[in-house]
Image 1: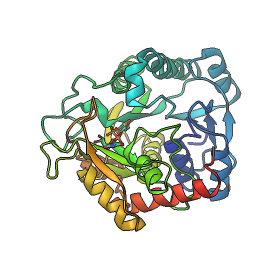
Image 2 (image 1 turned 120 degrees about the horizontal axis):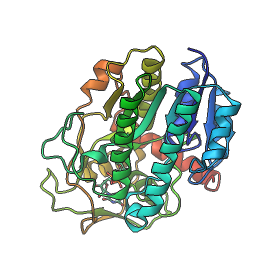
Image 3 (image 1 turned 90 degrees about the vertical axis):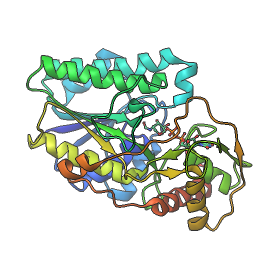
Image 4 (image 1 turned 180 degrees about the horizontal axis):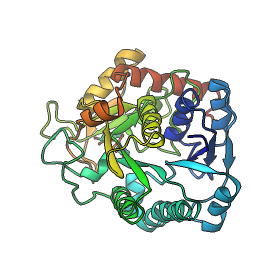
Length: 345
Ligand code: WQD
């Protein structure tokens, strides 16, 4: 099917990597909507350097329904890949209304546009946080959805429920929720990657900023968990592998290969990695000795989670290509490039 693909949050970490992956694999024209709330327009210039693709971006806040509608009035949209959302777990606890308003109103506005402009294909950026602290790991897509640990996680749970209800009320509409585990790393070119605002919340940018001297040390949040070395276990997955899953999901929708109107897929490697193991992997690939100490647990952290992604392997044909050392090496290469350019912003 021809027709444009609307990518919300196209200048963001996963959105930009997905644009790169899509350009090689779809004849559909890509359009981005990104108000640069947590990204920079320079990312599009770097995407052009990598794949020579100049994407059209609408600098629109998706909570503004009229401005969002205008995009659909001006372009025939065949599918939407919806990344744009606030995503800092800690900030969502301090400022829940910012998260509920932005993340849910944006989704609802997009679905109003789907209704009015007959867009029938939707990919939703979801998260493993919807599983909370699972009783059994690895988690599959049918693992219980436990009460969210944060307003951020709750917006992902509610987002999936909204999509399921919209599917029930609109028989021609199909949606795929991709439940990311811990996306890390950067494009192998080193030209795009994660751009944390201020002090990073997440582990890997904190590791690379400590290694390059921007941060004095890393605190490992908790060394007394019931895990093999006492630190938390996560399923780190390379951002380029996450990106490719979106291309596969889009093809599945456009070729009408879905088996239900609403489908969900876990996106992880299936390997549980502790914080200390992640630090050791970074030290090995970078040759840098990291200054870290074991500190108190972080409020809201779960002890251990990792995925059973066999459904995505089988149904999407999605097989992650990058291992933990690739993830750390690419993150480090990106940090070095960032500092070479005075911290691209
Ligand atoms: C990972 C581990 C910390 C920083 C993220 C996203 C969330 C979702 C899932 C997509 C934890 C430990 C961290 C530090 C540390 N992704 N850590 N010292 O909390 O698993 O959630 O992935 O939706 O949006 O936030 O990721 O990178 O913050 O933490 O010890 O300085 O590293 O305790 O065990 P998290 P994270």
